[in-house]
Length: 248
Image (cartoon, rainbow, N blue to C red; front, side):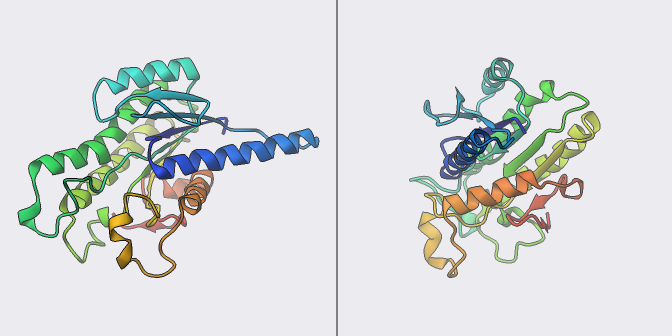
């Protein structure tokens, strides 16, 4: 893997991923200085914010259709990545949170959730699609959530988040089929990162069991391990952070 694209670079998990790979690159450079052969991974990123610690960054809002052309220009300039981790997503904002009942569900918030949790991933994939060739060995991970599993849902509630993540899971399934026809060695999956100590989970952490709240650094390491160890039998699936397949 020569180039890794972190999409949604403003999220805390994305920042931890960039830090994790930068740290590995520093270790690889030190190893090379000691006559060990190792390849560093070039980091590129995209996100709404102007700043990123990656070596190249595209500032764009992937919820919007114009982002596709902007990202394609970015890829032409920076080269086709070998792997992509899409970190875009939302659970709540200052005005809206997870719904406890049907009466709390609004069309506006559902649409906003779909834009952040699904459409941003779609636009990222549409930007990359023309650059995938027959011999591509691209690895793609979208950050999803176990609460988007229809068969695992025993509690109800959280309408917009659950529905948007379920839609993301279906998108990943479709994408995995299309891209494997185009590039048989391509691997596409969604991953449940576990509950991470970020602003996304902050309002709900009091209900989390001891030992089930993970640091961004732990989550970044686990997602990276899933990416590096993707196998054909995981293609098109929703994966737990430890790599085992979760039900859709």
